[in-house]
Image 1 (cartoon, protein in one colour):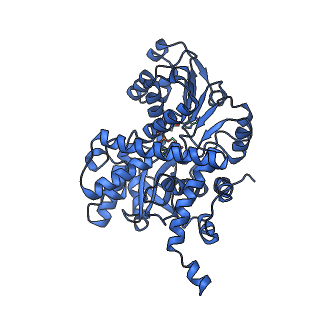
Image 2 (tube, rainbow, N blue to C red):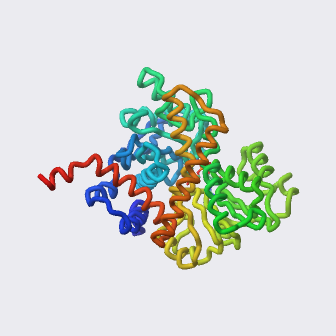
Image 3 (cartoon, rainbow, N blue to C red):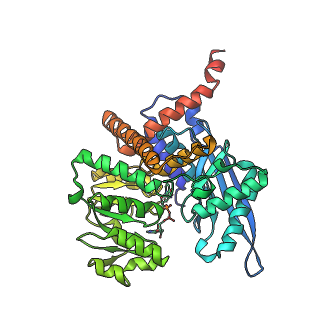
Length: 428
Ligand code: NAD
């Protein structure tokens, strides 16, 4: 039987624990999710039939504040995946010093098979099922793979109907008109861009001499690709679930993005018409994209894309994990031996949750910020914490992922110990 995602994720924790001095009690607490809820959601389909969907919500840890984490709609969603995503959120929030714990949710389905009305009934049904488990001071939802601002709006509205009061801070990533924050829709990609640009400058890697491949051209991947393109980097390959395109001279990312948005069709990426004329290209599979000889590889799709089976073929010098968990722990070892720098997910993609935090703050204060203000605060936090991770990696001579966990565990350990009664009992 293959190892569970959570067991694999926990190996990263084990590695970092060697370098921190937190109590055994705190370590024991960090190894287990605090609460896991699985629900059945009955949905009336457009043809009159009833379909039951499986949903989950996991709060991994809430020592530093209410749970915080996205909701994923995907056929592969299962409780193990949701627990691992909640685990990563716990460390990500601590790493960015946000006053939140880690949580995550998901529903097992292929959202492309549902009508908009069915999706709305499902999203509202999910909130009906988990309403007692969430709240602005308990556990706050946000978008993730195949969920968006429209779905977050339905979820917030349903929560308000149940509570009989307006409570916008229960969900972040909402439409602007329902209390969303400016810059939340682009936050993950923008935050990743700040980290990538700052970290590549340490290697004196100039944008114009840097080739980049991006796996996954969704919310996070397309934004980071466009910002890197605008900063002068050469994006030579992009892909989505259907496959990818490669052009040695570099792709025109804004045109590809526009074309995809206009067509609302994933296949529009594949140069079936006008985008083809922009630059000569060739089709690449997702596997081929990962193996390209580029300076920078950005996995921005799903977890477990680089495993022990393909890690040896990776040729990039630097990997920035925009997706959550795209590299297995076994692959990590292989990449480290090859001298590849891996900048971890809990740092690189933390822009989303950081602006979610800003949205929560704005909802609670009732004062809304300009986009420049949001992005300035985002940049300051992302670059500051990236620099700290960089320094820890050098200080302990460890991989950047281990350094990120060391930094996060220290904050979590302090909070857990501050709450604990261990010393009282031991001394008593
Ligand atoms: P999204 O649904 O907007 O985009 C996902 C993209 O990945 C789509 O283009 C899809 O076609 C593509 N894809 C799916 N399977 C693929 C495959 N096997 N190979 C290549 N491409 C594939 O989702 P997103 O919000 O951009 O999330 C992407 C990743 O970033 C996820 O791991 C998510 O957890 C992580 N993330 C997202 C946010 C956020 O705010 N959106 C925040 C933090 C982390």
